[in-house]
Image (cartoon, rainbow, N blue to C red):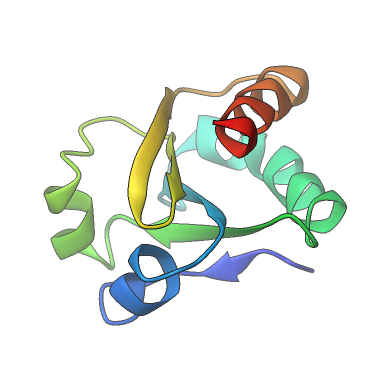
Length: 108
């Protein structure tokens, strides 16, 4: 599996100091919509492993980062490019929608 695990302690190095597009899936194990979109996240991580990094951040275990980005509902996905927020996606979206948003961020 190509999906990474992000935590408070590695977020800055793995996401903000990165030199590529990074998709961060803010989730929790009790969140049914988060579980529903997990397969899509894993597929994108595998299919786009040469273009970007994809990872998950458990909001219950990593409250500092979740609070910093004002995560109020999950799933929330944020696309970061060179450490800057490019797009925020709220809720469970289709794979096509997510790929479209990724393509836009890659080309910006």
